Amino acid sequence: MLVTTGIMGVLLTLLLPAVQAAREAARRVECKSNLKQLAIACHSHHDVHGFFPSGGWGWYWTGDADRGFGKDQPGGWIYNTLPYFEQYSLYDTASDGDPTRLSRKQRLGASKIIQTPLSIINCPSRRANAVYPMTANDGGALGFYNSLTPDVAGRSDYAVNSGHVFNEWPLRALGSGPRSYEEARTWSTNSYWGVDQAPFDRTLPDQVVMTGISYERSTVSVRQVNAGLTHTYLIGERYIPVTHYETGLHNGDNETWCTGFNNDNYRKTGRLVDGRIAECLPVPDTTENVVDAAGRFGSAHSGTWNVAFCDGSVHQVSYDIDWRIHRDAGDRRTD
Image 1 (cartoon, one colour):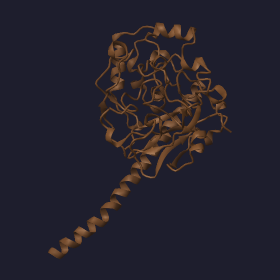
Image 2: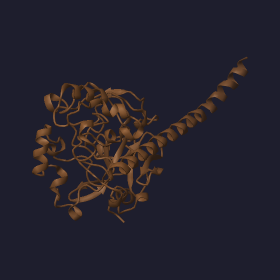
Image 3: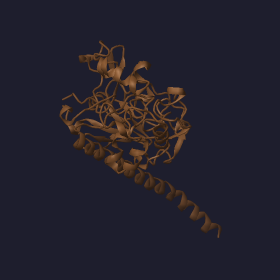
Image 4: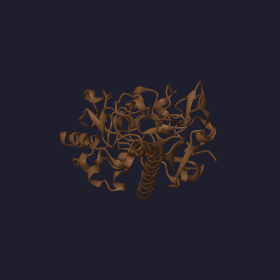
């Protein structure tokens, strides 16, 4: 009996790593499938509207179905793709039929959207598809400008490529966006938006700051991806430190999946240091003390992270990728 028990124990010890490896392999496949579906949804959006999903207005704004899919839509890229992965009813939850007025019905509907976790934007290797604390939002009346602000929110484990410089505006006044739909008209008329103030930083090469696929009020088409669809990132896994998977305290993971342009749902491939672009390589979630942690791609997987390119293909990319190759994969202009 003791010998048999001992042998079984040894066998279980040998089998357990294999079982865990098989489970992780299955989770990687599911993660890649999610990215594939999101890439297809982005292309379906492009087929209908002529551009990839727009990035919205800023971190104090969420989606409003009454305001269409272009520059007037305050919600971010994931919200804009909802109808293209069969989430029509969720997309319409914040509709009150009036694109110019913020009613309580619309704010309540937007709050319900915020509190809805979506499996398609969840990497099963990282955390459960659930709601998590939302610890940072002090917009209108200490919350979102166009939504009631709940204490918990659904999160995304994926981020769209915003370029090789910024994944949110470094100036808070620009990053928060206008405070109302009325003020948004003034911002548009007087070019107060960050993307309308190019060159935003005159120390940047070529005086171009937004070089990705989706960012504030973007309308990037396939024709503008001069680097080639097969060489340009579309959507990838994003870095979130293991210690903050569920806390909502990390500054790159403290809000929700449906906000406008901000570092929760947008990632970059370079960072501006003294007027030059420095490395901003993807890192595994187990890495600590990361510089510009809220700007990096990365994942819960060991060895590689998953990314969908603009042609719709999904690949596993090594963390050891050359930083210049990674930088250029975020720049749609590079050829």
